Image (cartoon, rainbow over all chains, first blue to last red; front, top):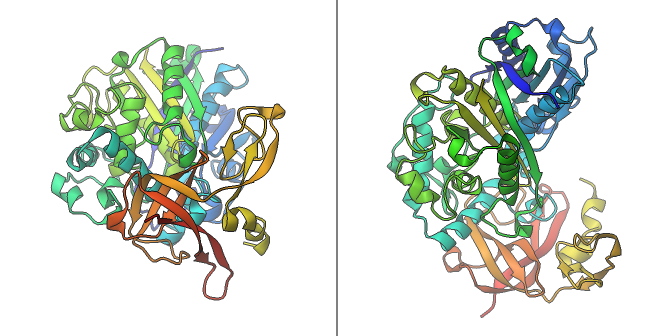
Length: 388
Length: 130
């Protein structure tokens, strides 16, 4: 297999884009990535796009062709493929692009992610998202997505005695980082009180434990490492790509508050990169809910099971801590346009590794990791990226 | 959705008819037609569950999606059936009484409706055992 590098990245601002359509969003992200790589569209060999539910959100399927068309590729007839794994769609699209280049099949490949979530009523958005879980045996009986993660939180707090305040610190830290990220949906810092006094959604989770509904798109361009310097002075090498699956329903898991797919994908990624968690300078994890970040940093090995609440409250996951987590603001503050999130995570790590992360820069960042989850952990994608 | 989508699940949803693998003895609810342990050597048959179980974890949903009969708050839980498998269900009780380890038994209830004139979805909820 060939070594692969990221040669260009682009991302729209995340938020409620009432004036802009699905097409507008991905065209902007793609154009930004091409500009970043100083590349013309004629050089692109293939595209992979992560999108969860355009069929429900904008009543549009056949997203691969649509994107290629509006990106100006229709007359070149390049292959363009939609990748779907609920909220992990973006992470899997990136992985497919990396595999295409590593295999030697393609040279210059775009991995994009896009979701337009505000064109339907919030109730319908919530219902569409429930499709990431088991519709027949979870959704049917009244499970909502916050409800499923709330059951993970109840189980976790019962076993490990994490306090509600420790859990809230995840959101406080992610808003602090989001306030330093110009593409973030929420660029305001919040206090512990903001979280603790927000509306109860599904006990013990409150509104500020939950990621928002977001419109947005992100795109990255990958190429063989040995050609990367044709396009950029700062290629970022893909050190590992890993993907794991687990039961679709939360109730079938070995342990409710361990995401075994995260454990597996994390271990495979470290093995592929010949690295350990100590080598990672910062990680973007999938904090669709505050409890998800707690589980993720344990399941990836950054702290022992049952200790992530204290680890977070002690500031070890903040900028300047032992392992900065979600410097972008995470899904909580940066926003969560589901299909775009996995690509945005790569966008953030590439910015950090290039030293372009501004007021949220991790000093001397050399190696970063992304962790993207579909549903309650039925799909997980983990990537490790490094400076060369 | 067509009626068939719900009609074909009536035995499972109304009467807790799951499945069992006769090769290894493992029970499945929700039902599976393929044993993940025995694979092609498995022999799957229907199995009626006793409807008794224990709460593994739970939450209190504050606001229900529109289609659900209970407007919320309601207790959503994962329970372990006495035969082994775990399932997601609603527990009919005062939300303050819900706790991990609570014993529950199944009961037949309305779950949701497809709007005012749509079909009514029935299924199994659970109630605390005194």
